[in-house]
Image (tube, rainbow, N blue to C red; front, side, top):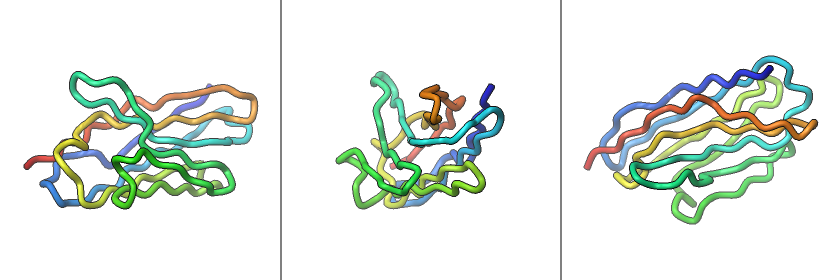
Length: 116
């Protein structure tokens, strides 16, 4: 079993910053991709950013230049640095992990609210 513990969500004014963290523990094997998804009010869950074990990243067009994904393989932790936040970034943010066995895991979600 794998546990993903997210932290760092909260309420921030437009233009502000937050940093999300997600620590994985349990029967991990080797973690391949780690990612952040989000689901805004009345919207479908969407990919925000993804990072491979080797550090290759990809981002949704809407967050490029403002959000940065990174990871610490030794700590099995993925981060999302969020700068220049906009009200449309308001959502529940979910951590997502795929291990070398192909198993996929979701975190419980952390709320990010950006006020205008």
